[in-house]
Amino acid sequence: MRIVALTFGTEGDTRPMVALCRGLLDAGHDVTLLAEKAGATYAAALGVPFVALAGDMADELRRAASRLSRSAVDARMVARALAGIANANAASWMRAALDRSRDAQAIVCAGLAIYVGLSVAESLGIPAIGAGLQPLMPTRAFASPFLPPLRLPGFLNRASHGFVLGAMWRAFRGAINDARRDVAQQPSRQRAWDDYRVLFGMSPTLVPPPSDWDERVAITGYWFGPRDPGFVPEPRLVEFLGAGEPPVYVGFGSMLGFDRERVLAAVLGALDGRRALLHSGWSGFADTSLPASVLRIGHVPHDWLFPQTGVVVHHGGAGTTHTAARAGVPSIVLPFAADQFFWATRLEALGVAPPMLTHAQLDATRLRERLEAARAHRMHERAREVALEMSTQTGVANAVERIEACAQRQVRLHVSATDRRSSEAASEKVKSDPAFPEPTFDQPSGNSCSASRTQ
Image (cartoon, rainbow, N blue to C red; front, side, top):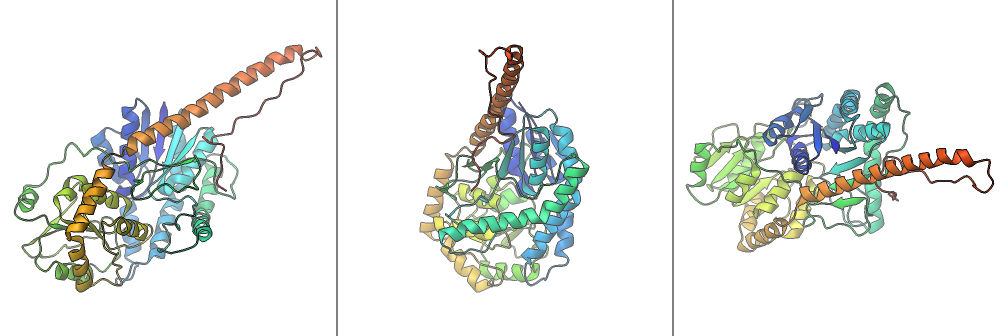
């Protein structure tokens, strides 16, 4: 089966899609991934055919960060920057996706490119499967993860999802409709899609499936991929890890626009001489002289590194959250924006992280208190229990199975429709005979893999 996967985001958004594509390839399918160019290295390492989409995520976010306050992270500015990237490249992405998908049986779409993928699937009459790392479908169980943590009654939880999804569609609708007209010769849409299957690459340990989600929506488990076979750790890192107790890891991935000097001062004060690894990330965090007990590192695969640490201090991205939890190591979350607050509360609820520490609250004393809590024996025991549960989850295999079922159902609908057309043609020969009344047939349900719709 020919499948096209389409996404655009940071490396943390792209790596799970690479892992999912590798699983589809291993199942015997012909797969191509279209994504932000930074994902090319990992895709090549896993042998996943890759096409780089227009746009540079790191460059655009750095430009946006240059306009941010150094004392706080402006989530609205980040959201506008992300929308700007998608809107500026919508036509280019749609053109690339159409070119690659004309012989495909399904499109798996995610991230900033999801509306492009849904439009292309609609244009070609093939199934679209949404892929997500955050639970963005309406439910009474919890509020939208893109809102600050809120304790709301069930009906407001559900309404919050509609509010966020509606705001997202309005932010992208103009550019998507322009691309639909200019590239795909499609009419404009006023409302977003609500009739496609959605797979969430999340652990059910962190997000138990809500009881009010219908059959279209599934939590498959996180999409962990194999480690880059070419990875070799630097000798100085291996030496540091073997020279004492497991260090504290501190890293904020692709986060930008924060006061690095203030955060570093709080981190070093909280460590108070403890061994630590500081990841520089996109921001260049910790790019200065450090105590001998602290080692600055570049990119190192988290699945290799985290099990060798004692505590993971991070921003609360979906990928880092899941990798830390599966490594059996407690977390301390310093969320910046978007879904990071949601993941911080999930880790705390599981008993594998102390309460989150926002940037407004951050100082050496508060971070030191959370380090002590995360180092406690009970939290480490609980972290090991969670890791054991997650080790049995097969997210990629579950997602592959559902994608196959969705695409195969559409093939059956196509064959059924073809048979019906043949039957209708044959019936024309006997229309004049009153003994053979003209048959009527229901039509197949478009490019959706499920008849149910979001209410």
